[in-house]
Length: 336
Image 1 (cartoon, rainbow, N blue to C red):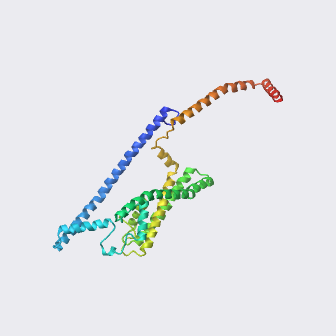
Image 2: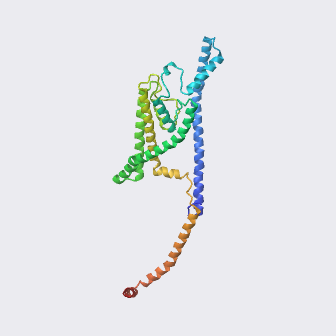
Image 3: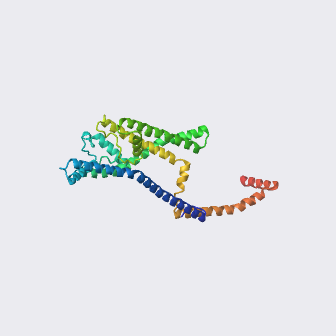
């Protein structure tokens, strides 16, 4: 049962939270439908055009090479596409890149435990698949524990202490200081982990423009990890091993920064009030409620019994003679 003094008030609060939750579920479903409609309307024409281009190229190739049958070409293409899904390409300019050297494997391990999962390279052997399952079962909770501990310590020096200091120093309301600090922190994080890295990636990756680089940064640090853009996969990439190590460090630091910003916004009082609208009220065990009721009843009874005594004593000390009598009786008791 709810910890409320008034039963009707508890029912009203519970119904209000339930309606808020229902509205939240409906809004989320509508948001998913809205996204599906937009993505379908924007991407479907491009998909149809690409399929038509591929059919044209295939038919042209078969006409120019009549000795190759359609079935043999289909078999070859299916094998090539299957290998490409495992991160292995048959192109001459990609043959020099290896997906499972140490730096590439370290990059893959970081994407697995951080749940980014680009999907550009996957385990090829059955042993690798089995180890990936075991490694993820241990590594994902381990990563969550690591990130939680790091973010908790950073929050003390980056958010809580600065907000408390400015609140005391400037004398402004804590909500105003916290909101301004959260906005500035988000702006600095966006500049350091989105805008500046996007400029760097657009300069280092030959086929990426600024929008594609910014898109990669956002997809990576939000742990979506679509895998359509993966840095360091170019056949002429210079210092590829060092580049992969730098990207691994960038992803881990960026993920910590994103969590710090999210935690900072979650600690705002307005966000706390918003979350409370959708949460159920905490319930209290019935045995604790009975103990509280008994204690409250005993305290009320004692107060009701002592109140008349206090009132009588107050009546006695209203005039001077009564005060003298009380003082005299106190002196007698002390001497005795």
